[in-house]
View (cartoon, rainbow, N blue to C red):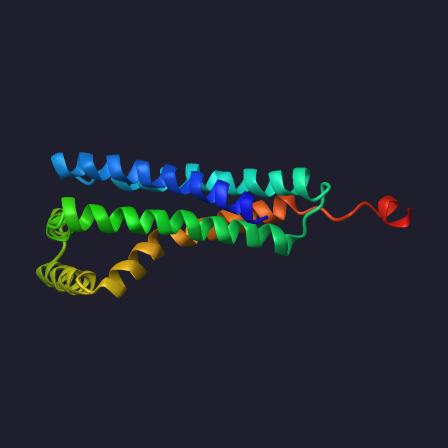
Length: 178
């Protein structure tokens, strides 16, 4: 199981990190955030599709066509953790070395969107305060890592859960009697 998890976790991590790198690079040159979330979450789903492949591979090639829900979910969890760690490491490098002003630009964009939506002055001020708090939290490495994991890990867990439910397969009762 370990080799299976490492191989597919690494593949997933490289995919999501590559998408993120180029997506954020394009944001750096053109700081319009429209569509970047869609690209980001699509890349996560593409990367996490390898969870399904890994569970099926483990079940069919290494475990005689049998896998419990628990073992399948465990495989998905480990792959999610590996890929998410790639994602976090990539974002840490990009943020610190290529885009240290990201939070300022992102905050301004979010405040601008609230203003354009016709919000009241109080709502705009609330958004400004919210973004200031978020920016301050982002300066703390612990919260930076926690926030970044919270962007990707839940998606991996959902894909793991769905894949485990679809691919779980108990031993055939005829096999048990033989």
